[in-house]
Length: 332
Ligand SMILES: [Mn+2]
Image 1: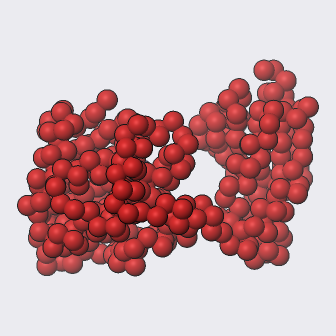
Image 2 (image 1 turned 120 degrees about the vertical axis):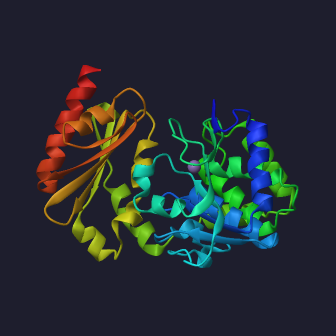
Image 3 (image 1 turned 30 degrees about the horizontal axis):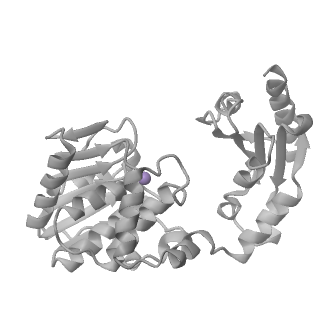
């Protein structure tokens, strides 16, 4: 289903945006806070397209970039302010489901004479004068490629690389079910333009830090089984983070490793945080609704991935939560 405006015809709409882009001189773009590969990829792809066609493009971005994508060419040219003396022909809003998530950023969007919103999430309200929102698209970079292709202009290697990283990261390196035939087609077209995919893969997925490996190792070594192997748990306390000189961000992905264990229904990771609190992450393989469980602790999320933060000591919290989840598993 496409949600587009003014036309509901995808081709027409993509061509309209391509034409506007070709005519424009001064452009800027915004994406959601705390960039992922698709948010940064779509911003930088637009930036590189503008660079090679003699246009000015400002990429507004206010947050630190994750290491996995910060190597992308142009990452050092992001700005946190738009120059006051430029009249912007076009402002792009990308990879953003709702204005609320943008905070003050949405104010910037109003600076452009024409606003364009590109996105692939479900239930998105188009916030632009022109919107191209395709729920079936693998990523925003997928949609942006369809627009850039229609300009007829050649795409630079840096532009192709940014688009590829967006599609690659949003599809989990072409493993998730949004790895559509079109996503593969676009990847093929980008590769034909000269991308070196194994180098990109290495930078995105096989580059990590020492601290990250150490903190993951600690969590993995403490993995425990409960309920005949239907539940697995592990934990990290503040002392672990201090000793390994790592931060909570370094522990990202631990829970995914736990949830890959064959035969489990629920994986839980407990992390001690400052202020006498414990953060709890839940993953379900399908049978158990972990959002329901996390809601009983004032947390949230969705059926297969949820989290909560509670006051309390690690030992007691773990005992209580494990008992609660064991009861849910027993009922199912
Ligand atoms: Mn995306």
